[in-house]
Length: 416
Image 1 (cartoon, rainbow, N blue to C red):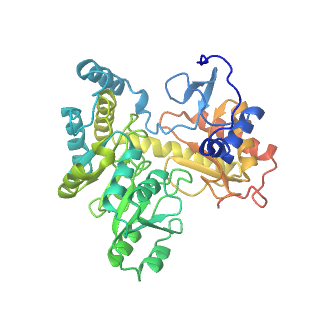
Image 2: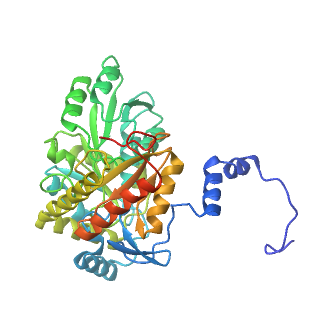
Image 3: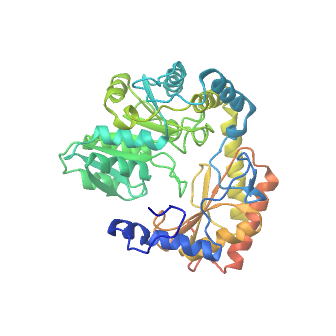
């Protein structure tokens, strides 16, 4: 038998392996590495804050979802440490069998009260919450009406259910109404309170009216709205006055709450049904004690200090005003994601690289995450960013657009 560390004769891989290795996205990643332009999987070497150590450098970080800065809060870190010391590093099983800690139920009760609903169910990830909800609600002959810019977790959940997925125009409830009006199949409508790439908000009140008229259940993903929108930080559901009307609200702990995990919030009877039917919940190991305790501590801080939301909004407003003053036009929104349309994928990656060279980290959004030719430079604002940091990144963005000769009239046209 040939030892595994010695050369083995060349042989063609199985067809399915050849298909894996031949995927165009894999080839693009290889090319990106060769030319030093791959902006993904950046090695992070410190806690994620306004200044973060990445790839051996101190970087001004405008690419994090740590919107309220609570991932670095001493109270949150202490809660995680204490939970690990008391409960251990992990629970080693699903909540169904042996991983259901009192800590999980305490967080569910806190989330239920925070949203003023009667039920909540905590998952290991936000992705798992959406995957679980879609897959248990939908059947093979049902309809899932989803925004054309919907997050992959929802799309994967619909695929898992083998339901019929229908796409409507981005933030266009009238398109939904036109398509769903004559459809008699049971169905759901899924939108995001704040969209993760463009940063714009859904008109939830109008979507609710359309759903009621079309007999669709309304599900709102507030992954990026929690802690950033609304007076108390409940999300776009709070601003639009539909907290009690949405059939389900899904959230993640990995943005404003600075931890890892997710949850579904709704009415107690429906949540209890999900508890016994949702396979991604039943057959996944429960959240670690540290992550649950961190999310719970962050949620309590948000409840006790709603001024954190106002501080974040002030930083967002400052960045938007600074970009406008320098001739750039970010996509309209008041959420924490400030995106500027660049254009071609190559130009978008170039813009990212030029910012990186200046010591600034942002997120380049290229196809298929954005439509071809409409790549985005995505900036995420943290409450803990200082005003000088805001001015620095605005100056750098203006310089980059100038260096790449991107104009408001040409290929780099941005939203007005």
